[in-house]
Image (cartoon, rainbow, N blue to C red; front, top):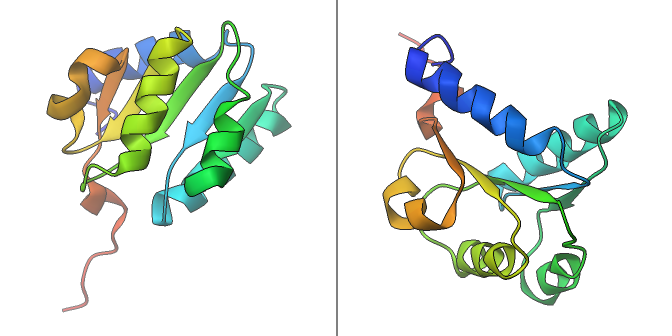
Length: 131
């Protein structure tokens, strides 16, 4: 996927958004939540302050209070269009925080609310079935 010219260009734009941010907020729920936790940890390890938005309900609302000036969001979200996705996008817009979306199917629904979309099929992470 990363070898495709359009993906490489989108990836470069995503780095330009995420790298200079004061803080990166990495969103994901369920299996994507585990990836959000891990990505946040890796950002922190290389000196890029980050927080994981991998919870829902009031816990997510509490973490959204951390949004600040010059922050950015890395959102890992696949269908269905969860309420939490909408809430994070709304909060990001209110705080002028750019969002980089990793998804295979939500891009068309939220293209006006995100700064960059990386089209990554959910099945790319799946192991091939045994034959």
